[in-house]
Length: 417
Image 1 (cartoon, rainbow, N blue to C red):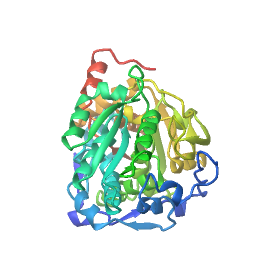
Image 2 (cartoon, rainbow, N blue to C red):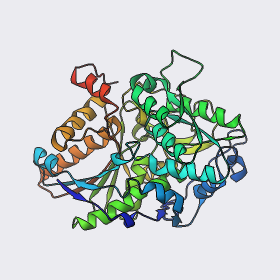
Image 3 (cartoon, rainbow, N blue to C red):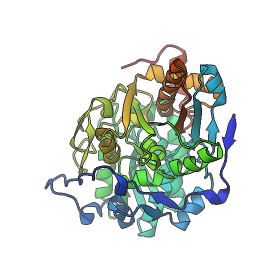
């Protein structure tokens, strides 16, 4: 195994903004009541102006505040690792590299944006944040970030994950967050990210001391995650690679995939592959349309691939990928043909995740297993035609708090839906 580690002072000091280089401009979000394009004043009850400005900025680079950098330095730059043992197990001529985002305090990539969001809210005087979480990765990351800036944190956790993943709840509470299952008004409902977003938005809208914080989908969230791909470009150069042939990431709302892929959008020869669950196939089977980001219809209408805001996905273990819509940026790039999308049933993703764990020694989150499934298939395709291929993927989070999912798979209880 070869690791490529940047020096501490090589952490990106500016985020890469893909909006100026998008092949087509994004359509604007629409107000849920008037159906007119939303303006800054419409978003001000939910977000600080610093984030609202980033949502529409045309600047190609946006500086990372020093206070944010100070916290990101706790774990960034993250390692780039060549998965040589997996390559040998597959017998492939492909060279596989993964960006290890599991080394963050919360165990995933989500802290890259949670720290930034907590900072901008704190800077503008907000004292409390409300949010939703699927598998718990985002709620954990925001709980950590709020602890750094002395903010109160309320997390609405999708009920299926609340019951499947109790240790994520404990980790959030350890960092001071209050965690409740969603939906709050139906104890028999498995929940969905759309419903949990409705609960969190309703909370934020009802209190003057509270803003809403979202872990994916929106432009500013993907912006903050580009530190992943920016570091990976430098590290691939250290490894002697001119560029990757394909960049892979699991995709629910789009922040994980966007973080690794967006810095490569202008590299026309680099394929960008989003991987989603076949039980929630937003990009592969959804329709491109304006739709609400939440189930109750309280959020702005976004131009995106969607399965319908009232769609409730099955209770798969990859709770972070159980979202009816997707990022407008990712949706636009898929629609325009710059990005590809594939979907897998969860049994196939756990098969690949265990193969990776036994070769590389790291147990991936169920969400990350989707990316690994596609990586394995890319590597086997390269083997079949005898082609060298450089594959880069985002190891977006570890699965050490998801072991009940592995227990279900290993003992035949995992059901494909």
